[in-house]
Image (cartoon, rainbow, N blue to C red; front, side, top):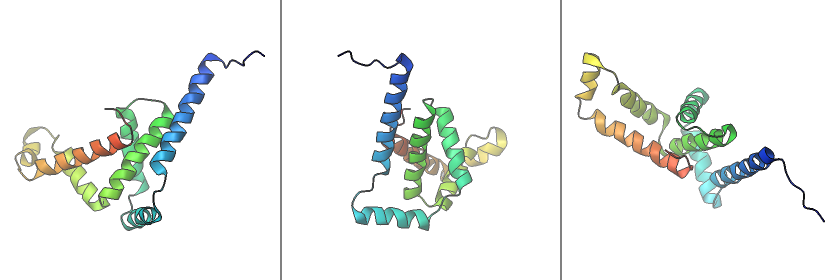
Length: 139
């Protein structure tokens, strides 16, 4: 009996889709019941607005090229991980400080010279890097 051959591009697309489904299932698979209850409580206790989640995912996808469906899931995983670790208020404060450090000229020097801002920006960058690593996003 002759084995069936898939068209060349279709086999790769199917393999990528299966890998994406497996990764997203692993990332979203609940652990012990207590753990999933804690996740649900955390998600409702510190909701992130949808628009802010979308902005994060879009920026992540722009920074890390890859198959669309795969990167949507990986970048969504990263913001979900951050949302479990930081309240939205803390995330907003840290990201504002981190973004403000990139302002050039005299206006930016007020923040760049402030010794309290630098560690906060590094803290956010470290959390984002860990979240991306945990969601299999390559730098």
